[in-house]
Amino acid sequence: MTSNLDQALALLKAGELVGIPTETVYGLAADAAQPLAVAKIFAAKGRPNDHPVIVHIAGKAQLNDWAMDIPDDAWKLADAFWPGPLTLILKKQPHVSYAVTGGQDSVGLRAPDHPITHELLQRFGGGIAAPSANQFGHVSPTTAQHVRDEFSTESVSLILDGGACDVGVESTIISLIGPRPVLLRPGGVARGAIEAVLGHSIEHLQNAGSAKIRASGLLDSHYAPRTTLLTGNQTQMAAAAEARAGQKLAVLHTQAPLPQGDTTLHILMPDNADEYAQMIYATLRDLDTQGLDAILLVLPPDEPAWLAVHDRLGRAAHQKMSKE
Ligand code: TXA
Ligand code: MG
Image (cartoon, rainbow, N blue to C red; front, side):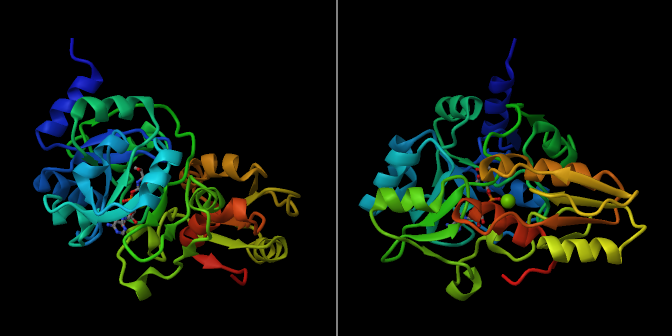
């Protein structure tokens, strides 16, 4: 009998798409060596094709297959954090297709820390191109069912079910193609942990447009639920709830609840950043099915541990009330 993993390998080799689990979010995978297969990812997601996708590899031993002129810092980071939620942007090898890199001479590489996908990568041997397995701009998937909800069985016939993702937000992205490492997207590995390994502080590039780096996770509107999402502090959200009295609302907060209305659903989120990150996308997806008029979210503390969560909430929100 063929296992799911055998099936996934056959589909990838045949140039088809497969949903794969990672520790961050689920990915929509294609053979990175087949530009036509990679093109199917863009078509299925409705994603503009000048956006680069991350190439997933089994580990450090495959780095040289995809990247060249690799600086010492990249080896240090791979040593410290792979397999894990860290993507390194490096100069690409000539064979790496522009379909993968969005026309750029750099490639994003990461070794995911999930037993199923790790085995898949080891048996596959090559690289697996995979963005998050969601429609362009929508909330990222953290369960196999979320992926099923996003794509028809025609475009994605197989999804490997690896359970709920441990980290829950995407990988941290560090660019190593300039004179100094730059943080392009905060994520599963904390900025401070990276700085500790490198021995110096790193710049956080907040405005990708100004630096001519195309990275879809850096677009302003991204990771968004379908329901209107408002974010702000406790006072602002209390005022917003009052202004919307009678509407069907959900209020997300990490501390004291806002005044209760009959039509308001109160959701107490964890006050620990890692636990919050793990469940935020699933929570937003669940709320999207409840026919709400709006989701009001009291922002968590403005502290370094919450950097990735703030980044995603900032992009998911339709209306932001806090000064940022
Ligand atoms: O955790 C993750 O990173 C997940 C899982 C599936 O691995 N993947 C993910 O992929 O978030 P995606 O495509 O949704 O976001 C990857 C980000 C995008 O913003 C993409 O533009 C950026 O990585 N990226 C990839 N290659 C790049 C490159 N050469 N230069 C700049 N940005 C790059
Ligand atoms: Mg994405």
